[in-house]
Image 1 (cartoon, helix red, strand yellow):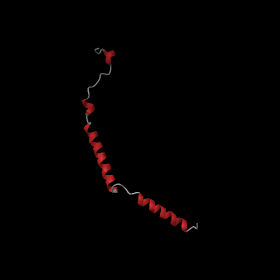
Image 2: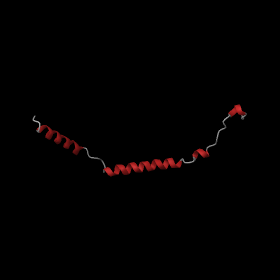
Image 3: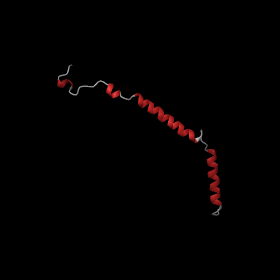
Image 4: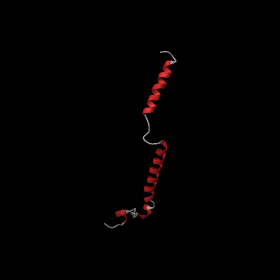
Amino acid sequence: MSATVMPALLTGLVAEGEAARSLPMPDVLYGVLAFAVFLLLLGITWMFRNTASRAPRKRAGGAAAGGHH
């Protein structure tokens, strides 16, 4: 094949491949969906705020420091 026919043939094949790969939803919705997922994860994380201060503290010495059985 000549040097001018090959790029035209490849361009035609690439154009056909792009037409067959359409996104299932508009591209803006991917960003909106990701933002909603991050907000959901933030909400789950926020539910566990300040839980370390509510947990009972264990004694450092244990039985060796005169603790009960």
